[in-house]
Image 1 (cartoon, one colour):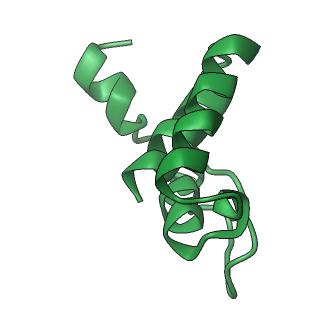
Image 2 (cartoon, one colour):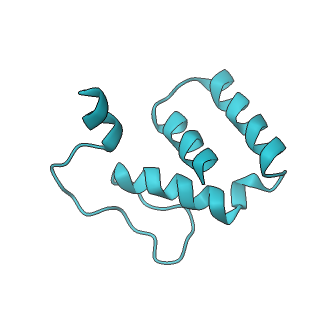
Length: 80
């Protein structure tokens, strides 16, 4: 789940292709070639997507988070 969070946060944060490729390689090593459809990875990715009000990635019933004025956790922690 943590690798899914790391990956999706990197995608949303636009860290760059080389950093994203590094995370993908780590996930292939630790989860396997099917990392993109792994339930645990998807759960982590969807947690990040919900935090940002984006739709989920394939879990039944996925939907965007309700609109609120609350900032994402990383922005609250970093003060951005």
